[in-house]
Length: 301
Ligand code: GRG
Image 1 (cartoon, protein in one colour):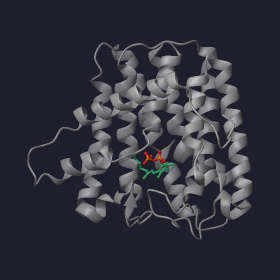
Image 2 (spheres, rainbow, N blue to C red):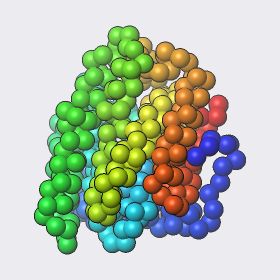
Image 3 (cartoon, rainbow, N blue to C red):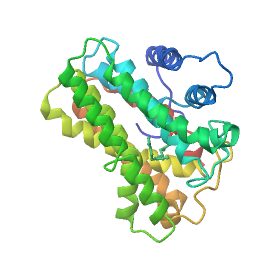
Image 4 (cartoon, rainbow, N blue to C red):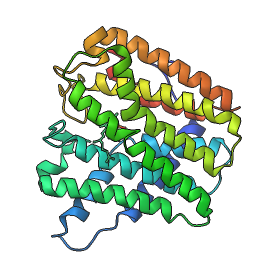
């Protein structure tokens, strides 16, 4: 997971990745069927916001981690899609005027701009409910495991995860923050959901307890790196979302500058890879994928 600018992915991994990506797109479409009623704006907004071209990093990570741990069925796909629905809900809310007040997301107008704030709020609630419904209705999984999966998702969304992270960011981000405070908020906003993803993969594969902390460290390092990547994208002209939304906010970039943040991002990525390789004998697939995601112009500028 070094960040060399000529990083490539081998053909076998590229093919597997495009299969994984295609299966996610198909399943998301199935999980959010067209309502057939053009006045059903919430159903429309659920589909449009989720099916818009996102990276699908979370479901891909879930599926690859589960595969790496020996999973061969479709539980990983459904769980990955449930996490993508949670992520989509969080983006719809994050873009609203009372939060980031964004106009562009995934290269398209944000939900509240296109459909109105009322529809945006309802869309986020409906996507979140759909996510939990998807987890609860995965067939052939034991009720005990399903309950644990629901608990993992609930914790990642709520006051130990996204909601707390977002609140801290909104309320504390306008004042000066220590590096530790910024790292903590970034972890809640991004790392905790990655943590839930690897935990879900660990759980459905009945993997050994001993690897769980290493997987968590991988996820937290990845989360720190990814939030830095996201902050750098805020300054990137070819981004698929608004730029400059972090102006006046205390972030690692405002604290250290872009170059230092790129350096730190590399360190977090290396730490993530180190932990990945402790768990998987063959970590190349996930490592190559990470390399692809992070090897973007925003990081090499
Ligand atoms: C009720 C689910 C829920 C959340 C409420 C609004 C909120 C609390 C949390 C938002 C937290 C947030 C915006 C975190 C940032 C995460 C992040 C780095 C988003 C960008 O992810 P990408 O780059 O986006 O993976 P794509 O579009 O590629 O999927």
